[in-house]
Length: 120
Image (tube, rainbow, N blue to C red; front, top):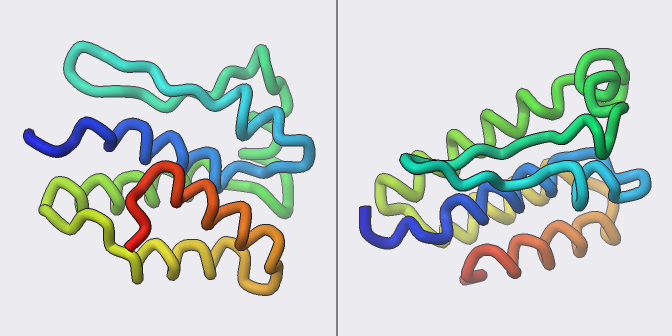
């Protein structure tokens, strides 16, 4: 499909946005994009961040973050494939949900999104 070249990278940025970021190692080193012959994969390398499984399964604060990431990526990809690209309101809504009362976190998320998606 025409115009989907940036979709894998947008999805990578979504995964990094949602990932816990105490040190940034998980978000920026362990989560990687792998291009495949007929698509792409977002990979969480446990040899880089061995605690990823514990965060996903046991952490009260972060439990299920990979599931939430899959849901967000599915929704975003569906939107793009259906021609609803650069949806500023949906993007801002996602940022607001991820950082409701944290202006510093909100700025980091918005900057990350600006780098991956044309911002309005």
